[in-house]
Length: 54
Image 1: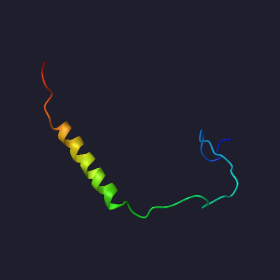
Image 2: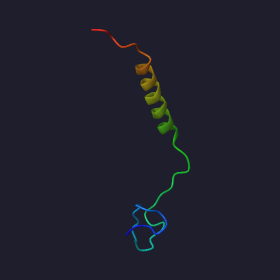
Image 3: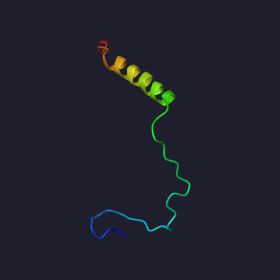
Image 4: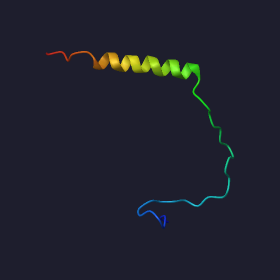
């Protein structure tokens, strides 16, 4: 079934179970932010290197 207002967009009809089994996180943990920073620093350090000729 496609949405009547948007062409080519699929919609699924499900029973009303809003909120069941959902857990919203208000903000990321300090550990997650630290891991993201380490990953970002690793990424930027690898993109700063000049390609080797060989």
